[in-house]
Length: 334
Image 1 (cartoon, rainbow, N blue to C red):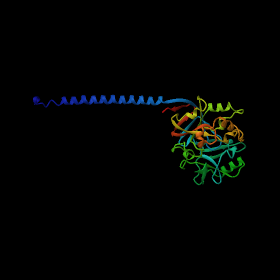
Image 2 (spheres, one colour):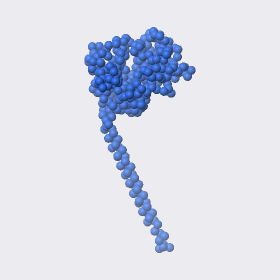
Image 3 (tube, rainbow, N blue to C red):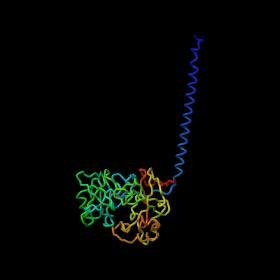
Image 4 (cartoon, one colour):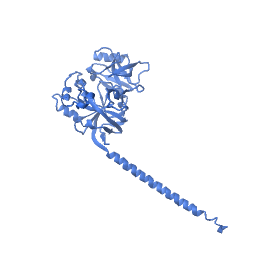
């Protein structure tokens, strides 16, 4: 039987093993080639990022029109910056009929400082005891229908103690304080200005999730003013250094940290900028008049900005992430 051919099967088996090994090697080489291709593509994508600045400060403004809080690190959410329990412009002072109240009507709102501790928002103001408000309000608190710039949005009432505290400090008519909860429907930035994307959402900001301003722009403005103004007059979320004046106007798409943002429009300025952030006194003139002398829009954009001068730039959020002071600002080159 030895010469019958029954001993020949090992030859094809050996051939099969060689072929399999060859295929494995080819697959490995293919994977390596794919890895090199991916890395080359990744590097190509990275080289399309242009460094345009560095984050020098981050600010969150939990209560609309009240003093901002400087933070070292923040989450960039769809609705704007967040630091712990403090979410940007997610608390709002309203009249009893639901219409918003800002420092345009009550300039002394800018004197109220905001911090947080142990699940509470803490409001502090001159000659007032601190007010502590739970971030998670009782469900028995009423939901108020609010009105901002012609748009409707809800807010949960923060209670009688908060309402009395606000009224006492401002020496005003009865006001309420409300909180936007994440299960509520946000406003659409595009309803305010067509320059925004349909995905841009906000709670109580004027129109944009994020506003960016450069130190150079502020420096250029102050070089034209007799009385210098502070960054607090303009309330940016992200302050950037290591760039030229007004370069932020040209950043169509940017990456900071692992967050991505898309430029939408210049920030149109109003009398709010003329409130002294240290005294709460409304001037109505500077720096607004100086800004109008050199920062008005192109005539082709007057249907958007009207007679408002532009200072700073509004951005929508295209990818959420985390940013911190010291992060490099990259412009995406397409």
